[in-house]
Length: 486
Image 1 (cartoon, rainbow, N blue to C red):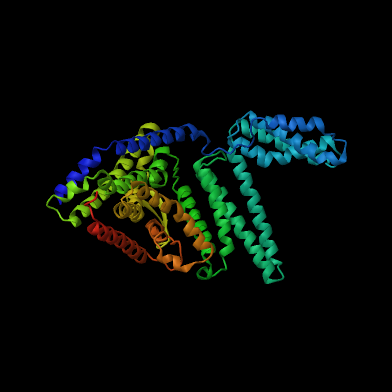
Image 2 (tube, rainbow, N blue to C red):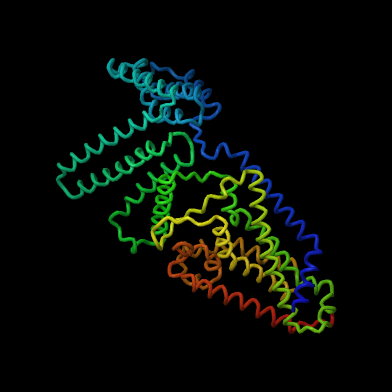
C-alpha cells in the first residue's frame, strides 16, 4: 500500500498542472496583498466630500435665486455645503475636524447663512452661531477634539435629566416604557462619550472609532429585544439578535482593552479560507477528477492492474493520495499567506490573537491566531473532502476527466443557492442533504447552524454517510469495470 501511495505521489508531482495551479494561487495571493496595501488608506475613510462636490454645489448656486422663495431652501443647502467643504478642506477630508464640521458646525453655518439671506433668524441667534463657529475653528486649530466630546457628554446628561423628569410625570405604562427606551438609548450614547474621553479616541476614521459607532448601533438594536422571549424568535430574527449581541460584545471588548485589529497581514491571514478557498478546491478537484480517469483514457490502467495489488488497494491508494494533496495544498496556502502577507504588509499584527464571542459561555475569548486558522481549516475539511470525493467518484465511475472536474464545481457553486432556496421556502427535509451540513464552522463557539434542529454530531454523521456512499459506488464500479477493450 505504501509503495502504491508513493508511486501515485510521484506521478502527481511530475504533472505540470499542479505547479501551474500553485503558481497561479501564489500569484493571486501576492496581488491581493499588494492591492490590500495600496487601498489601506481608505480602510477607515469616511469621505465627507468628494472631488468635484464643491463645483457641483457652486454650479447650483449660479442657477438659483435666493430671493425666490421656491428656490431658497435649495440655495441655502448648496451654500452651506460649499462653505463646509471649504472649511473641511483646510484640515483634510478624513480628519476628526471634518467629522465635526459636517455633523456639528453644519448647524452653525446654516443659522449664519440663513440670517444673511433671509429675515427668519434673530440677531442673538446669529451672534451665538457666529461665536460657536469661531470657537469650533479655534478648537480645530489646537487639535482639541476633547472639547467636543465633553460637549456631547454635557448634552447627553442634560437630555437624561430631562427624560427622568418626564418619567416622573408619565401617566401611562406605554408612555413610561417609551421614556425608558429613550433613557436606555441615551445611556448608550453616554457610555460611548465617556469611553471616547477615557480611551483617547478622537472622531477621525480609525478602528476604535468604528468600534465606538458599532457599539452604539448594535446596543441600540438590542433594545428592541428587551422584552422579547428569545426562544420564540424565528430563525431570521434570532440570527439578527445574535449578530447584534456578538458585534456589541466584540466592540465593547476592543474599546475596553484598546485593541485595534487593523493589521493588514493579520486580517488576510485570519480570512485565509474565505479568500483562497476556491484555489484550494481547484487544485484538489483537478487532481481527484483526473487521477482515475486518466488511467483509463491513456490505457495505463492495464499496467497498474497486472501488478500484485487488488483493485481495492489500487483505488484506496489513489484516494489517500488525493487526501494528501488536499492537506499539502492547505499547508502551502497557509504558509504562503503567512510569509507573503508578512513580507508585503508586515508581521506586526500576527501576535494579536483572534477574538471571538462564545455564545455558550456568553464571553469574549482570545485564541492564538495560528490555532484559530487551523480550527477553521478543520471545520472546512468535510466540505473539501466531500467535493474531492465527488470528483474522485465521477472520475472512477464515468472515466471522464472533464465531467469529474465540472460536477464538483457545479455542486460547490450551487450549494449556497440550494441552502438559500431551502431557507426561503422552509424545506426542512434539506437538512438530510449534504450542503447544509458540510461546513462545521457554523457550530464554532455556540454558533447557529443553517437550519433549526441541526447539531454538529448530526452534520458529521450526514457527511460520513455521503462520503461512504460515494466511496462504495466508486469501489463497486471500479471492481466490475472491464478493461479488456481499453
